[in-house]
Image (cartoon, rainbow, N blue to C red; front, side, top):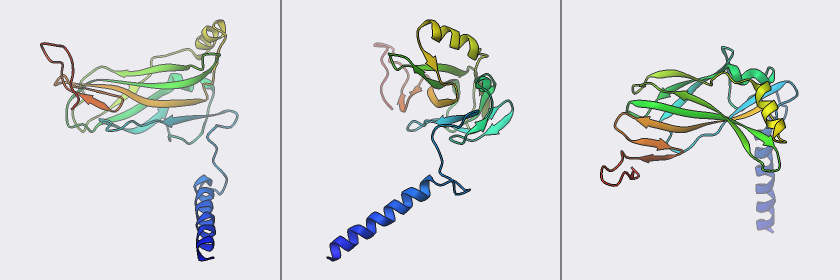
Length: 188
């Protein structure tokens, strides 16, 4: 009898925590899908990232990851990130991407690159931005292929960081500089 009461109490407590976790600061349930006219950037971190994203900006206004913001679908053209090098080594190139679902029979994603190709000293910050992309031209290209993309919800990921010492970080794995004999890299 005590065990049943214990399990029932645990179930109620866990249910309350789940409910509270879904409630926002105003007491309304949060949604993973943005409302009409709203956009959202979902930050998808990888293990041991050598940088920290300190700010997300759209048309110069700060937005917060996972919190919807108002704007048209062309917000992608005005996306930039302030990124701080937390690796302790000089970064020579950063590659990030913001990706969007493409509704097609292949269930693929559309990736828009964000690239910074200059030295970033340890503990320094830089602005990384996407090249100007026309959402309308991307839509036309996808339509010709029988697909459509949802530019309202983007997933932001760090893809690659290259270092001055020849090592490289790729999606959670740090590899040393290439072996001169074989050209292969070893995990660090």
